[in-house]
Image: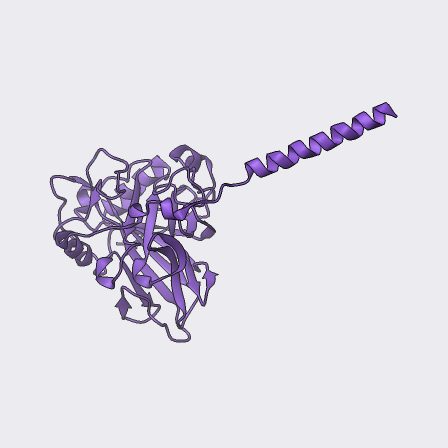
Length: 316
């Protein structure tokens, strides 16, 4: 009888201990009013805005690409909020399938990818798109690496390079020239959402800078270590950022038409799903296989070829 009572007592104590452990291990609610979202904002100087727009004219003849798919979505951002899960507004992640708030170059290199080629284990992410309040995953994501600025001098993006482009805190379209919306098969484009007609699909182009300072893999605002080349396509890098990189461009196609569109974002310090289209932005964390990235830059960008996902020329 005493043994039975002892076992019952131990069982009750164990249950209480487990309950306490569950409660203590529960995620502490995040006070978003105390979170600094400045890292999601970007102010473009007049010179940089002009340089960015000048590079948006269609250019072909020196590029390679990766075709990726949406992997997962979460309120994480390992560049702006490293090691702080759930603090960011919701992002749509593609490429590396392991990307989370704690991601590092090592973890990404050890992780998987849904990109073609599989040698690209980079992490790419953008705010989640919503239509009538329902999250919509991209149908297709093409990542272009293009010889826009002085391609003969281009070098691969360094391992572990991190960068954020676009102004998630924009309050008007003219505050975010990095992103533009269009409809598949139609010539119009806009910095805010377009209502695509039936039979078409919504798409977004997002352009990254091409000139690196040659030393930093990141900077306090996640932007100052790269700038846009001057003079548009075929231009040059300034002396402050002399190292030429291929222009990274996202082309994201969404299986939607019509209106009712919004983005995950941060408005007045609060994470929302109702941000306007002109707040679109994107992040890049480079984890390519170094040898394969070097081969593609040499063959395609420096060599002046349009290459497929295999890194081999498909046209000159």
